[in-house]
Image (cartoon, rainbow, N blue to C red; front, side, top):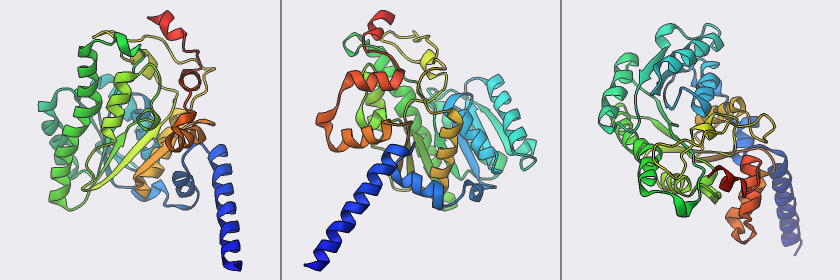
Length: 315
């Protein structure tokens, strides 16, 4: 009887601590533990990371976080001038740990599937190998689901899903030949609990959560982050961008903090990591385990600091 009393008290204490940490932390409990007590990203020094979508946003700031620890980088995106800017910043932040040869610029379009192997092999030939593929390229969305044209759905899946799947298969072939490797995919908390006014986007993120895991795969799920994603977001029409800027008063995680947490997740090889400002992490836990508590209007306000009626004004 005493055993079960002690066991019950221990469980209550455990769940109490977990609940408190969920409300005070800006990441899930596993990542919180690894940041405090796990391996430091400096253990990645000398590794080669191929980052897609590296010219801005989370990809850019993850590159900065890794460069600070002497990680060699292949920076891939469509805009070569922006990639060169990011490269210069990476070399500066590395504090002489990296040379010009250690940061490679790879101009590529993730929707040009036929070019993926050539670009990845370019990095392999340059460095001799690649250790980690960091799939980050993608775009968000703001649109009413019933108004979205099918071509937009196709474009989003080409970029957010099939691009990552195709490049991951190419990387997997390389990893199998060298005997090791790690694939990371930036998905979103929208792929965990869904969010309003991003029907196609949520579909692409849920799809990425089904990637095969025959090698080590890390799914990175950021919440609202200070990047230029909103201006570049898809709408309901092909070729159209949402065009609004993230406001400084919005409640979002900084891209710098998100990049660092990504580095922590990579070095500790987590399977899935969440990161977002309070109170989004405990909300995500509640929505996963108690979906009846879901309130779309509240989620949209947390996500974009707006009411759900504002999407109609934009449309």
